[in-house]
Image (tube, rainbow, N blue to C red):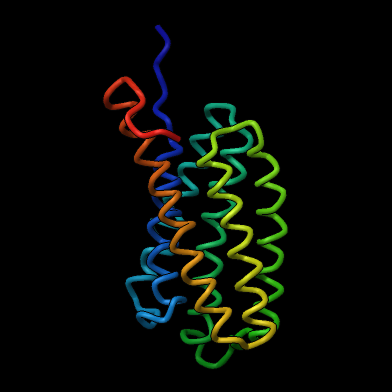
Length: 185
């Protein structure tokens, strides 16, 4: 008897979406980064997405494996970039803003290609990746230019991106729980 595997995508999407919303509340200018964002980045945005990616591997889904594992590692490296200079007794040098721009740009390039991989999939999934590559490029431009306005715009755009991932996660969970499509996606 074959065991039915659960869909790991909602876990990964929620880890990504909730963490993205919380960080972009900061980027939009409402609150400073706090331990709450760092903890979400490590555990839900980071570890939970890596777990979802590994489970996508088990299902034979290369796209899901690559997306969730990579973005889980994004969150873990982002938190490390913020924390390592603070906890290394002066041995870790804080990354310069312009160099952080290149870090974010590279994630934007990766995400642009992942967005192309969503063509033919659901509109919501396409929107999540479209809004995410735009977010990464806006954040890179913010770090290269030092523009607070672009950072604020990126924050609002990031809220839309994160909320779209949460919506897609809940649409998939509700469909599984109810046995029919409840929310369009």
